[in-house]
Length: 283
Ligand SMILES: N[C@@H](CCC(=O)N[C@@H](CS)C(=O)NCC(=O)O)C(=O)O
Image (cartoon, rainbow, N blue to C red; front, top):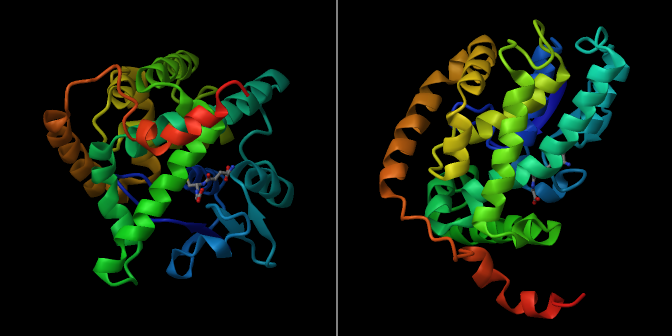
């Protein structure tokens, strides 16, 4: 059976990583049996590209990167989801997939990593992920992981935008996904296709999470996105209903506690990159 390596399930999402959730749903939609595995002691240096997910097929073939995994599975087991799509629909799927993986991901990163108060909500999951370490030794790796993600956000360029600018970009992307889905049950119509794995995972990684920011609010405000995510959740993840309800309760509390929006603040990124910002000016 195929093995898929991921982090941990969270908030009614199959995994705390949207990329892992994408591969998880692709495998389910394609009807390919798989097991979910954790790296020994979460050691990402043992992942082929230092990232999750990756899969190990029955014949020991290892594939890393969600899009490459999808291509590999289609080649090996047949294109079980997209064979009847038109060329144009396939092109839209390809572009939507890249947008979600390369742009939308940073909107998700902002909702959970940027502000200390938001990361505090995320932090217990990382502490749980490090369960093999004595409690007092878990703080440092969590701090390092957060700093690494914020560095990626910064060096990608998306993190050079202020919080409000990232929000503005996110609203446009959420509108686009909502308008493309319209009132159809699935992205391309009456049947799920591979792009639904990507769209669903990126939506629920905003909409189901306990993070209280405006990007999450905006996604939740779209009734067609709520219907779409509920539909796929009820079909594939009803066993995660308790986690989802608990996350919704946490979010209500976090919204109450959230500080008023401060438009001038860069939050942790400003602090983290104070020196580096100056050095890169003019390059
Ligand atoms: N392009 C990769 C991205 C995967 C990715 O960034 N995974 C994140 C989890 S959301 C990760 O494992 N990050 C670990 C790190 O950057 O140290 C894919 O599509 O699989």
